[in-house]
Image (cartoon, rainbow, N blue to C red; front, top):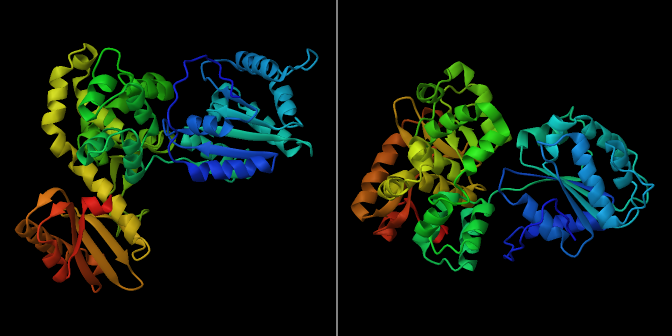
Length: 472
């Protein structure tokens, strides 16, 4: 049984995917004492995974609230232990060391999960070093499976992964929970009764592979994309109304407005430091700490360079949002925040629907590039996009330097006639000739789109062709 601090109504929903993760957890559980770290960005499903695993097991779930002092937190932990395990009065676990001593010497089967563990760095850093000591000294008959999880990816790295980290190599395994892929998301939507491909695409472009949002979709009995917009985002009691603001405030406090500005700038296509600085009140030389927080702590921003460049030397880096809902919020809601907070939703929804096709172009490109990359990675070790300072871009450039071959692919979020496809392929051929780093290699040119007329002829001419249906 899992005990949580707050009592909530239990809604039975299907648990999707994560079979490999559950298998690993079961393996560690059978060889107790065990120590597992689960990390991943917010809303990716860490807590749900722990709850699913803990069903039919003796388990305790502790949540680290950063707004509570260590004394209040330990009082809470003590109460939960007593209620679940019927501890006698003479056992005192209110002190952090006593709590850690108890759980590392407990001789009956027990799963103990501590969620948002990295917050001890703020509340009581000694808890982390004390855990190192007590875990190292745990008794031979300890039967505890200790699971700690955290959504602050950079902080988890500082505690467990970096060489000087206090708990370096203490965990038996570190499980990074990733958002669902587009295929996994589509399979989940099938299970919810959403079978239309365009509806699935729109929902994926809105929510990405973040499981939590689809649980809300299910809980609020949404019937599709527009219904999800109205129920989950654009209504007075929408559960996602303050989602982005609340996350930013919790992580960054008074500075959250600056992160808002940066997210909105990137959402509107401003990808270089100078472009982002022009849209915010932060100079380009002062942006790096904000990018670190958004990339390493929250996991919602990524830095890309042309696939041919050296990461340490490249001066052409760009920043992109890899969380679809943050991107949506920054593009459509933040610029109209006063209107949104006043409850005037209709005009914003109209803007979303009018601009949706153009807005989702880059999202479609990212999605298709990821799916194609999965298929060709064994043949081409280097895969990414390419651009130069003159504005030329190739959506996907794949390179095998050893075999001296290159594949250049253009991606389009629409159906193409045969003539349109040939014009795009000819243009991509011309752009591929501009990639000086791969001169002398053999080139193959390709195209990907929703549907492509006269595909067989294009393939007979030596072009690579992908259509959305086969990728999905």
